[in-house]
Length: 175
Ligand SMILES: [Cu+2]
Image 1 (cartoon, protein in one colour):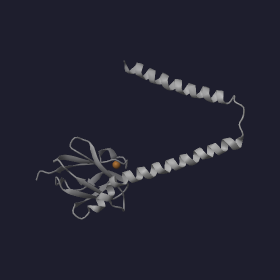
Image 2: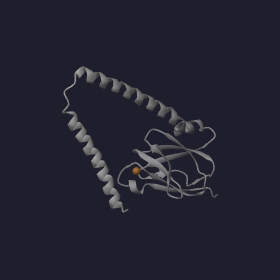
Image 3: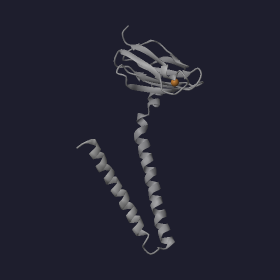
Image 4: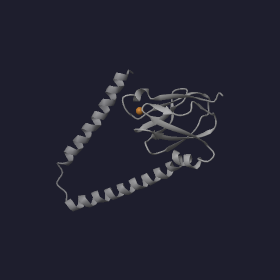
């Protein structure tokens, strides 16, 4: 089956569902009017349960995801890791050209002028970590480079005319 036929079938299914919903609504308006209090009570009950359900969902999602929040582990690991200051400026990153492999590193990232973003790309070109680089503020980013090679830092926050060329390559491991 070609992509065009799949798209057509998908469109027809969704269009059919939408038309059916319109028909149901149109037909329901033909029914005799119901008492406002009866409708309101049911509506308010549904709204209450919906609100409770949303609250439970948000609490559960928060509880399930908070252990994976990266900045807490960065703070907890501040002592044993090696601290590496990174200063972003239009349009460069001031940071070491060599970093050790298999060593916990805390990048201390700040900016000299405007907001930037410090995004680390691995040798395969995949984004592996990122944090905002903000003036007068330091953000901490904990990274362990597990394979040696040529990495690069690129700005991911539009910061001016030279944003596209704002990058820095650095070597992990080796010497
Ligand atoms: Cu930028």
